[in-house]
Length: 328
Image 1 (cartoon, rainbow, N blue to C red):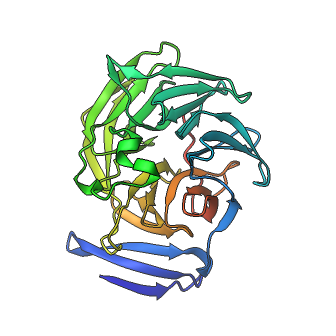
Image 2: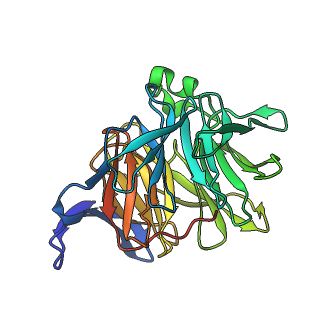
């Protein structure tokens, strides 16, 4: 059931989704259009952007996956200037470590790349125990300083021929995987497999590693301890039951300092906020239909920067928390 009400203080229009029963009470999910208007564009003119990351000088890095670009791009702190750092093919996600190295999930020639801001690119890893990477998708740093990488488990050309998602995507059975890659050793360790399009990845404040599954909407987690992870646990699901049919699912995600997980949902036109127990607490609507990844702003801003593919933009939205500091 879905209804609408207007907040008494802010005047914002909010849709409330009632989902099932929990302890005898309906679970209510807020759908918020903040201020009653559209999000602000931080920058535009990007070609299928993903993987936003802020640098110490408050400039930004993104990947541009479009066939006309295929590059890592640096954006000035005010969003007005852009320059290509390096062209790699089809970069899909990135993370920056404490030494300033940029770790890029490259999906055209599947690999984990290590890059510097001067454009130097090194192929760091392409396989695990003889099994080649298929679709490196997203990447983050762990508490141990190592690289954690998702692989969607199907070649990009097979999943989206000529840039279009295949019409039978619902029946596809990719063998999505999660890897740990040594930042010094190049060693690649398989952490999990059998995920139906592994995508976003993030460490939470609770000593768990979180990974999402695009084709089902699920978010999983793994207990983390001393560089090892436990078995896969189901945490939550971001699919809105009232959304129209069509391709949709979780993409990039980050944690707020409040412990909530902010998940971009491509095709659903929102950032779904999962509370500490995995229940949807809010759905923040984006201007474009295809939000693809997210980062919190610098300097403890209570803002999220969302890459969006329909309009090739980074959208800027207000939230009620600053970001959880990332491991580097």
